[in-house]
Length: 210
Length: 199
Length: 199
Image 1 (cartoon, rainbow over the protein chains, first blue to last red):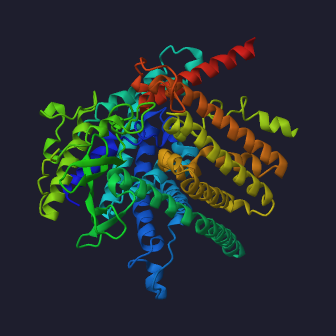
Image 2: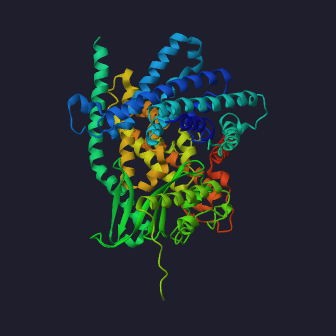
């Protein structure tokens, strides 16, 4: 895979098909943690880290354990001529891997920065149900990316998520002081704000490195 | 200490039970899914080259063993070659558009089906839009009866009417199909000129 | 609490989408057409039922510390069953819904109900809860689906309802439209709810 393709993957994940504003992945934490800039930045980094790591691990598991073929580890370890096609276990395997990774990241953050740990609160374990993480893992496979492409997409998707959530937090901090009609306060106006951000990002649609 | 063994054990057993149940479901659904894919391919091939629909379509493989293109025969004994079917890949607005196109032995397009696209709904996605009451996407119908060198969108001076507001998608399909047929011509050693029918 | 009440609450007072603001990702992504909305609603309800039933059945034997991973294995299994069944029996829908079928596993509604309800209530009540939440989710999906398809494509379930002359509001089927319609409906829902309370 040449640099141009990798760059396109990155640009697509961050701008053209932003994971949050265009692909609708990661909405729950996007809405939940975008009220303050600091927690938004922290969440963004945590998600980016988990996404990159998860992309790597899930890709390895898919191609070396689930997919039948010469590289299948079960075939190599047990000397099987045609190792079983375990691709139907993809969903279970991936989500268990992600859940474990999040546990691990949670422990690391707790040790390294207790302040960030307290700030992120309940949202940290909720990264497990962040559809963006499972989403990017599944997309990496469906789009048949190789390992480098997967790492680039995983990382870029995280950056795209961070970009979206940080922008949203900046806007929402200002919205706090605005006079919003009562029914729209909180989530409703956040969605309408997201609509406007999404329109802005639509402008990136024609971007390509031809 | 007992906890440390019991917990992963319970989880492990649960996972194994789940995996076993799932493999049962998988074995039941796998043939159905394969059948669906097979039917889908047959339908696409038949649409691309209708004259071979009652005969047989034979894949021609490349050096890597993948399907390069198809040869279409009107009869099951592969004696009457009626045309070829090939795949075209065009970089569209937001996705790669995969088109299956069939030509007769002189290179005239007989049929076409866009197999895969993820273009903008309402704009680029209109390449597959079928108007209510019709049976084929109007955009693709324009290609039937034409030759590769005639394939250009109106904006590039050709006769293929592009979709309003979706020039890139229209161009991607048009150019990729043209390219694919020209590549096919190289592989089979060129298309013989059609003799003018004497009426 | 009566079984009926457990069912009804999912439709309005504890509607997973409008009240609890859960399961946003699929709501935004698949609500661009009525067909996709109903398809996703049915699939999610199926997984909810399966998961609630199993979690409720084993609720007294699940070690507290690993209950979340256990729930996840159960939910993921049902999602895989739904995924494979849909690919085999409704391939068009499966293609339309795309990655959001496997993503049902991270739909917070399902894990939420398993944790908050099914793990603490008996089988019958858990079934009622699952049905209520599932149908409530489907209804919410439909409010968006009908709006977005009608305004954005001029059709309902693919049938052109607004006539040929209607110039569709393209934005409705694109991402911004999803955010906008959901935001507006959320505001509307809150306003209606506040009026009910102060009336």
